[in-house]
Image (cartoon, rainbow, N blue to C red):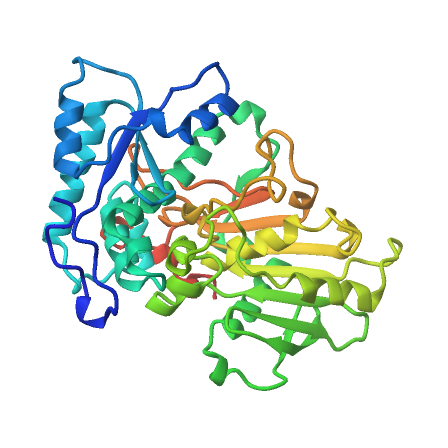
Length: 417
């Protein structure tokens, strides 16, 4: 059964794992009338759900359904809001078998780096679920294996859904081009790597009032946090750069980085809600220099890897309110943004459902430099390799520096230096 093994890292937990995990199922298309609204109504109707039963009993219940059956079904853990949807009862039964096998075979010695987690198609949602169980900061009941696996499945499916949308190139309103390393190193955008290099250092190793020379100007660090830093131009024109570092591969960043796909579950937050972003900092910068549209743009946003996700979120906020007028956004420069972590909170009003065919206004300022065959930002090599989603704006694909089994090294920041 799903809970047949002792809980991972039990010695560190104050709360025991429930002795049994009860499941329920219902037809996913159940509704009194066609439409999403009526489907949602059916989901909250307790009469639509089966009796509460252990996984083995639920499997036997599904096996009694007429076969073959291609009707979609939905599973949920009793007492939880997380749900899973399957194409047919047989698919749901296979998933339960997989869950039972994984929870018996996994142990707390597993080390799950973010880079390895998202090497699709080799990613196994169960591996993420084990990681979530170990590191979640919520009560044990809220991070049981089934709930963690349901969340992990959503994490995996999110980028796949975006890639499916992006197969319609005729509707695309975003540019993609190929360039050489020589052209990149001779471009003005290359100097933005200096900001990422600074922000990637541990906070206690960053020099107070550090100064950088970039974009033909001298910049001084005016605000430092764990995940981003703010630089202000010393020329006095009010221009600022805010830079978001990537993840360091450690457990701390997997739990807390605003771009981490696991952050919401670990902290017990809604996955559809954006993480904390420096919106007040951005508004303060705009307010300091005024909102006169005749003045030059003032804010440049830079991001690397997982930092590319909150960086884009900040950029998309421009033009949506009076405090962040679009003309105040100068440029958004992203290096290997980890689009394979496409967050569930990239949705309206932040990013419209039809953004692929109707480009967000801020996307005109966005440029992403991705290295080909980087599994987190561009995709896996080969005709069967999974492609990573493409960000809004202009995506520049640079030649790979690593090949074969070492392709994951294309994601490293040192490649841009």
